[in-house]
Image (cartoon, one colour):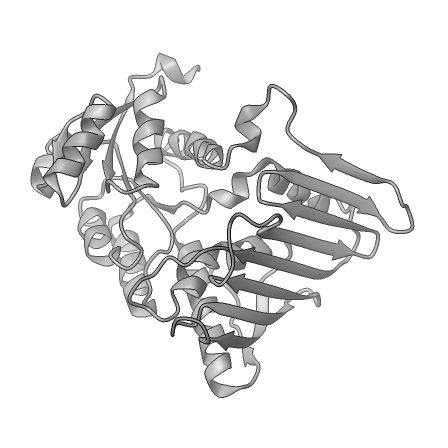
Length: 334
């Protein structure tokens, strides 16, 4: 059945910040969804956002819930996720939250326990998985085109997004890296981390040596002492015994190479394919799967457990740096 044959899914958005704009845009413009409300802490910001997308503004959660949303999405400041997420999980309404899940592992466990107790749909937006180069690289890896995987790297650097945590870069930005490396390679089995606070007092740049459960090794370099203006500010490389995949700037380019062959296959978005080269479009793609899952009554395409896993890996990297030694990583929760 065509999605537009259904009654539109009623969606409420919590948050009026920059990325929250993408939440409102998507649900206001899709033919199969209706943006029924925008909830914000500041009345003027909420009213401006709601007016732009022909919806209703709220500063009261109870009034917001009176709109009877079928799905709620949350995009709040990085260190302010726990209280609102818990309150929304208690409603039982399907919930999609932005990363990071939270900064504290105990809070993450409380949220997951609440979701399990209520049977709530609880997804997280690790939208990097939906980039066209990532999808194509994942398909090549799963098809065995790279052979046995032996090495992978993630590099992601830009300007600082300051918060109260001295580990903001690692927890709220490099969570994508932990998620992506496990998505493409295998569960991480140990970490050895180096960090520097030489610039503005936070641990703004981290370099982590990784061991994977399948025997591969890897590296992660994440920096807030860099710039998103630099070429290749984001780079993923996966090497196997028979091939190599390199993803540049998430949506810009994929290179696939074969061992011993100097000819490289390259994917870039075509002339009319603006959607595939647009970073925000990765969220649109994720929402496609979220809507299907909500309508089917199934699990979210990326469960919030993935957010807890990325947070666990970040905390083990912090522990490794503090102890000055390699730290073992437990297997992910099924």
